[in-house]
Image 1 (tube, rainbow, N blue to C red):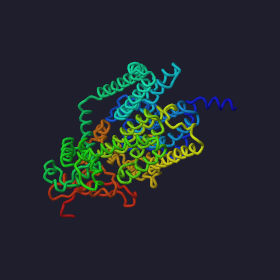
Image 2: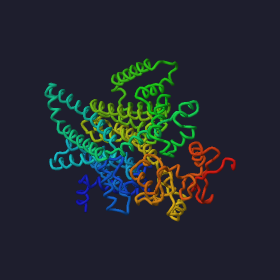
Image 3: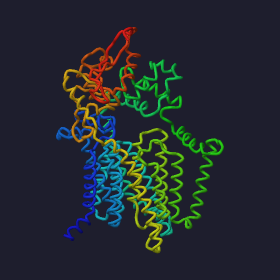
Image 4: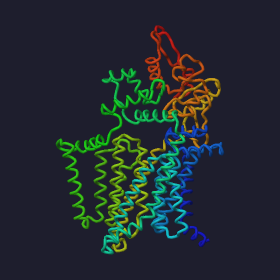
Amino acid sequence: MKNALKKLYDCKIAVAAILTALMATLLFCIYDPIFGTNDDYIMSILVQHGDNHSIFLNFFLVSFNVLAQKVFTGVNMFMVLQIAHALLAFVTISYIFLSKSRSKIGLAAAFIFEALFLYMGVIVVQWTHTAVYLCAAGFSLLYYAFFCEKRKGVKIFQIIASAFFVIAGGCYRFIVFEVSLAIFLLMLACMFLETILTRKAREGELKKALIGGLKSFLGIVISIAVIVGMIFGARILSDKLNASERYSEFKEFNSARARINDYPVTQYEGNEEFYNSIGIKSQNDIATIRRYYYDRDFFTTERLQAISKFSRQTGGGQLSVREILDKWLDRFDRVMPFRVGHTALLVMLAVGVCAAAVLLFIFRNRLKLLFPILLTVAWVIFLYRFPPLRDNFPTFALAVVFVVSSYFYNRYYFTVCAVLSAAVFGLYEYQYLSRLSYRVTLTFFLPALVYLMVAFSQDRLRVKYRSLPVPGKRFVYGVISLFAAATIIFIGYKNYYWKPYTRNIPEPNLTIQNYINEHPSDIFVYNTRLYSAIDTSRDRSLRISDVPDNAVVFADWQISSYYYDDLLKDHGITKLFEEMIDNEHRHFILMKSQIKSVQKFYNQHYAEKGETIKAVMETEQDFNKYFGVYKIVTEKAAEE
């Protein structure tokens, strides 16, 4: 029995698979998997209806999902496949940790990594997360294959597997591939420099060191070039297969929609002249856009583009790189005792950073293990003074982990950690100041963290623990343990901040769903943000969607997708909002708090002179706590 257990423990891939399976099983026992965004939810509906076209996912990936859904009709394959990909990625990353380190250290690293991040992969399922884990696993496995694996047959298999992971990740979200590749190349460049410098120091000749370094990195560079070529080829083919006038219009509309929904829009008040010139009549129209009530006949691509352009010109909307830099400098300018120009502030910051670096270098031996503590304290003070407003994932704070940990390594690996830390921090600041989604921060932080852990080796340690006296060892392990515990608690708290998304719906909306099923000849129009009003699969997403055929979404990017365009035509609808008026067989399903906004929009853009348009609730007041079924009717203004 002991021999069997020892053999199993020695099989690193088996241990990684068992660890991942146990952690995932524990999570599944506590939580139900849910989609992290409405985009995933709506994409799963498109897949279930055989729609191969997507502005988010690669055509080949969507086609594979559609094929899988046709074979396995009883489950939501879009979610199942993402969970399967995430599990494969975690098994791979854990396998690398176990193989590179001593058994106990590798097992501890794998356990901590999965405890922190597996939740985001298999419970809060979102294709950006899936892409991040796949790319991080793929590039890490590629590094391991060339610099750690000794068995040629296994190495070839690992290279092929790494290509699969990276390409699959890029098919989920191409920008994730780009960010992961950039961070990986940055790390390789630093490691290449380390190799050259160490060989030069050992051999005393730069030319030989350079040639030897090139030979060491040639194989992985060629492999990366092949993988990059394959993924760009897949993207080009995907665009070719999606190429059509209809798809081009779809992408153009979504691009304009994203610039309105993802960034601030200039207020109506004070800018009435411009807004009135493009048909916007009140702040309610702008709020209607922001709430995803898309009347496509009114909110055309041209109108959305005009709003976005005006917002940029008036200081809102998406910021340029220069505007982001100015905004970043303003954060420091606010704490200065006197006002200084941005140019002078940049010079002061550059001088300050250089002076701090020189002082750290001069006193590096005296600081010793106090350096991580001092740096952490400084970082906490900075975070306290400049608290991030959208930090649902602690990338901003955890960039310091790289610098803190790097103090324990030699000067070359310290450089690697510092460069990656600066890159991750800079990318996060760009994300934060440009108001991008917080989900994007995961693409910056996680790959860099994984690559650093994979590139770690015992010979890069600066502090030799074996040479320390017993009290020194206790201090070192105490510092590391406390810092690791604080990090785990902090990340864990932030991760499980998502927990409310996995709660059971206290009042299932079966009443609304039953109401729709009782009127099969009617059309019910609802907003994707409110999909729980109809589809109870939010708390059991592994099943296929429960949306009835006569329920139509009218919001967000999917309103111009192939599937919804065809669905509206099947129901005989050409102008959705206009044809809702005075039609007893067409209904809105909305939250009761949203009716005034919809009524105002109708009265400003559809009511004739002497008329008023109302949204009349057709269901009982206590029919549902939050939602109601409404019809749109026209009345004479005098009757109000």
